[in-house]
Length: 376
Image 1: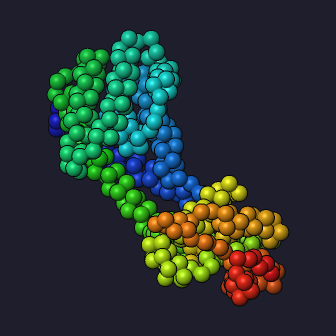
Image 2 (image 1 turned 90 degrees about the vertical axis):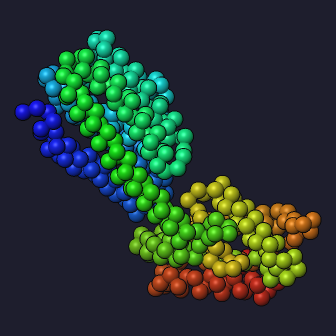
Image 3 (image 1 turned 135 degrees about the horizontal axis):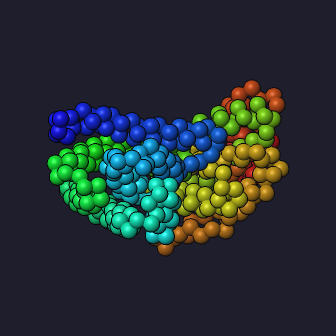
């Protein structure tokens, strides 16, 4: 029976294998990201997918090669090697240096036992070229379908060269090489469509998550994010008997800013205040976040800080706003903060008890002259 007669069956088998490989990769990365988030880490999803992708694909290709190493059919997984290179270069956009690529290829040759074959180095040059060309193709963006055309032309050109080299090395008949090239197009197209859909969905989900958790004007976390983080922090504080300090603050006389200078000036004051405090929090503790929980009201959760430990930082934040210059359309705007601070207590049954106490302290500051900090 000729290759063309039974090509359909392995093609469909390979399709499900490829989809399984990609689905398992996506499942693993999502689980790792979820695991890190559940432990109050702040993983970069792109970095997680990149690092996991490198390890995952390396193990997959080395495992496949070891399975057929030394047999007359050691070429059968060549299309999956192309798939691996395209995956890490075009889809993961890995920034790998030339010496790193060569090191990986040498390790692969040692595993494969082909270190001293001249043709192996030709294959090595081919894979290095494929890697960098696919990265260039990815950067050269067009309309979606033109992107696919560029992707297909580049990947198929390299596939044709690869199968030409394999044909020479293993003396394969022309019809076998033709069907393998068709199969390569089949795999690469499925990968483009499937991974493109997954990445697009992930991007949409990330955008929705950002919109849900971040304030559009100031780019800091919003009330929804604060509510979730405070609930989690309060639970951990009560469970592990760890300190948690809550800081609420208002921009004093903010309505006067809007009435006197206009709403654009008010937006400017909110945005600059948020930026200044966010930068300061990064210097204090990168784990700290600023939340915009109302019009001109902001909140900071000092996790693992007692009020005494947080007080120095709170004083510094208020002082930095006093000293900062706020200027809009040539007008100097005075900005001051009224602050209410409290700590989770043993008697607090729920996070609302803590929030009410901090809010009462905030309004005490506002009623007694503003531009001050009340702790209690």
